Image 1 (cartoon, rainbow, N blue to C red):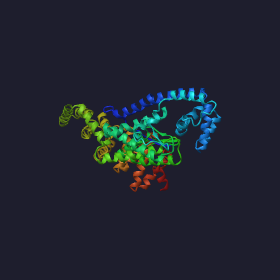
Image 2: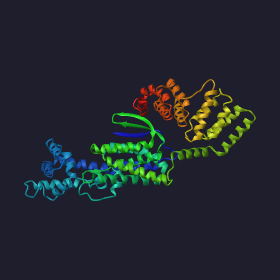
Image 3: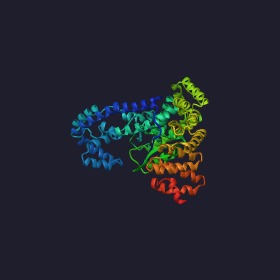
Image 4: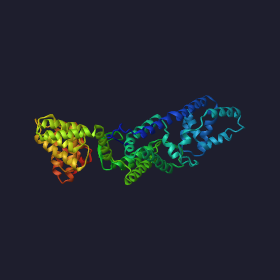
Length: 497
């Protein structure tokens, strides 16, 4: 088993993912509404069946019929009959449409049977109690003689076989759905979700046709969201929690690399003969989602993560009041010109609070506050710059230049948190500032040897050094990588160096 969960993104309740929430509610209403009512009615009918004369009359004949037709379930059914597992045999009987049709036509228990009248009466009473099919009607049907019902390619995505099945799918729907919904907009998101369900069901119909049983569950549509997510983030490095059999950890990797990993997992599970799970529906969903998101990106219909971040920053700017911001900036410049640097720094701090992601404002605050390197404003402005989320070249250059100045001038010393150091080290590798990245890694190893991002930070730094031809410096990090991430690809590469 392999699965991965994104750790970095959180839903924005300023613009809630209402369509994702609505889909979750619809799935729950269907399961705990008509599906649960049908299940309760079936349980009541099964209790009547077990107390009636029907098991003794029908079940031996049913097992004989399975053996005559060379059903792969015949041997298991014979064992269930010996163990008197009436409920399980009844479930199998009710799903064998050919046998059930013969039974109701009096071809199994014939009028010549001495207990025919008793059987007929109790069978009619049982049939009256057995509910009209709901789940079977709207689920995909993989039987040999199944009617072609393409609408079930969508309706099956709103049905589930158990509470665990439902809750697992809804968890992944929420984790991936809110990010994709914010990027696509509610209408396009719903359309793509349903198209993903269709793609998943279509591949499952092709793969499982004639093999019996039914297909149901939102996992195919959710897999489509996973494919959309991977294509949307492409090469952006995202933190994921993953589990591979009994091993679990987290990794920071380009999102698009997870798509082939997910596809390979579904193919492997299908080939090794996994029972009860429609892995081909998962595969169909992944491929459908990837294609849909690729088309949406090509048509410019997607708000990328960077666009969403800019919109959130713009909303914060608007909420803060443009007039108030301009007033603070004007005051800061006036006070700076009058050489009242402490007051100017306070005004820049207030302006930065109104526009926390405005790089020019943060730069002005930092440059003013550096004139008093022991003051709290200098440390606060530096931290604010180091925590900028944008990854454009100008922002990375500002962060590196500010780091160099801060390291040189901060009094009585730098006040960097481990999270900031790890983030800066990875960013400095991106702009090939390897010495400063190594310096931060060294500080992290001394001050926060158990930091959760240390292994990934060292791996990124060593990988950057390797690609830059600085093999000896990269190998210098190997002892720490062997302790923290012995199975990491970079660690193995350094061992071969």
